Length: 508
Image (tube, rainbow, N blue to C red):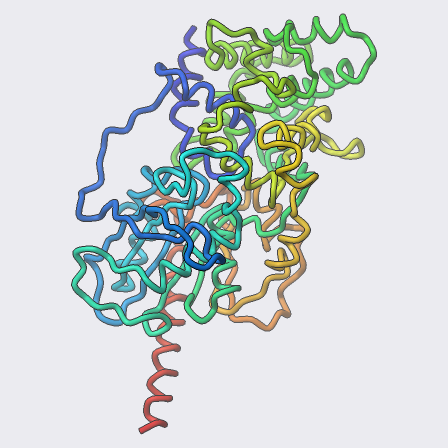
């Protein structure tokens, strides 16, 4: 019972942390969050002077006379001095309510203060209250794509007037706009500098997986490589045991196996495989001050030495997860079946989880899978791209989504690992699963001889955009990188100011 309550509390508390990109266990976390006893409430409110404010944003930037929607944002102008920059953070693939606090409590806020600037947190279209439509059908989500999201930021830079701020900001590039982002919004930061260099002065993409990938088994490699060895050995042993049975022709053995995890009624093996991967999402949810992966999951294997002990411990953990996630009026199969088109996950057109699913089904993929047979794996090989891909037509309609996401086109349009821009500071966590698709991936091209004014930093023993945390919360090594970010951006601003003054003198 104690472990069951701990799972409820921890899963409830990491919903917002893990919502930065789809992490393993996202589906079960949403189920737990939907049960009132597991919702983590946050009653703190941001002072009204910071927002929210709303901007009339075109629904379709590429359609003349488009209708508009109310685009929500927050702004902190209290540190501004003439000539200071504007730092913009797009909150990415989640409602921005909690991330609105970054205008006062984050490294981005500290950076803005040091630069005498303005910080703005803007919500991403179709998330939170920034809704071009009241539902999330394929027809309504047609304007949810990379090009529209980038143009949202560009439109904001060109036209927004911050309420209760009496200074008339000069337009870009006279006012320097810096786009900071983490995870998917880190992609947006990099791509804004790539596509809009005339109005975006600099960018800081943190934990930005700019290289799209369809079969993204590498996601789990940092966990396998850097997690505690005893824990990894236990997980690998369980997965090997599980796959030996799942890939066999013996149905009774499969049922008995699933029974040890409390899900003997779960019909499809790939749904079972995905369920077993759920605890691995705790790795991405780690922060500089908390480690739910070790404390909540790896701890179940302490003192155990045999495969059967590992299986029973893992099985007990999954039993508690399912108890926390599934309603009393539904069977295990109804709770986790992704193959039945009647499942409410496919029929509830107002379900906000459809929004990110649309983005990965149409453009990004990022399907997190078991490793190929020639590599060790901590995830069942029954979890393959098909498990993700089959949900796309079931959710949006067979003829309303591409056969596979346009990930190749995204890599071509936005240059993936090969994007090269001046005045970009790339930041990644050494242990971050998403670094495997960033420009600082071990598989990315060597940039040592590239002719660009860019900077790179890998935060040691860090996971997903840990540079976002206030300097008082992070290690000395992260604090050192934060200091470097300030020094570099301040240097870029000073260089640009000297260049402008030189041009002015030449004109005179």
